[in-house]
Image 1: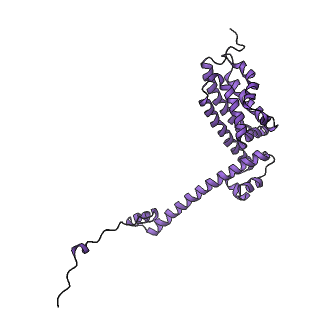
Image 2 (image 1 turned 30 degrees about the vertical axis):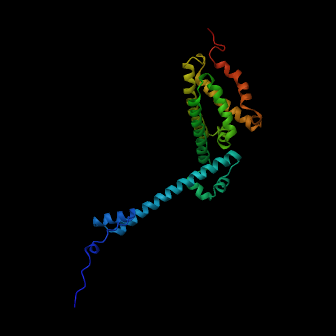
Image 3 (image 1 turned 90 degrees about the horizontal axis):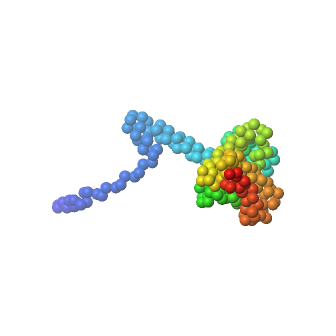
Length: 255
């Protein structure tokens, strides 16, 4: 009886398969198993770390959502007129969960103010960098805030409403501290104009920076009174130019 022919050599060498990629959990388990440790224990540890990371990320997102909701509610109802329940309902969470991220309504309002002030702080940096005519920097700063009030709704109102709470030492510390940072930013930009000889040298740049911030509060009050809505940027410029002219070099400067 004849034997069947041997299989061809080509059939002996089968093509190699690419090994399936292991998950980080299985890789960690295999590594610790090689070290004589139970793989199941390693996998459980990696799973716990992965779960904790996911919880942290979701917690950070939830906290941000609560803060954004709080800014909107505070800007609408003011600090005194807002309750924790109002904020929790706006954020779609329970009051108990809200307290997990913020210990009190005051803490939430202060952080909401800080967020609003940082937003203003960043915009001030932008306008000072973009101002190509240092002699017009004051006008640019006021026109910028006019547009800021027109384009934004919650951040400017948060800054405006915070002024009503300055009797509280905690509010005063945070609010005045934030305003000082904004004033220092203004001072750096105004200092350049003074160094170029475009500002009177007998005028305190520090005082001018605080007058600008005070002017911002005036514009916010005009918006609350319904006056700003009917005013064009050109009209605002004509209103403030005589006032700003007192700071320009040569206007009332002796010698």
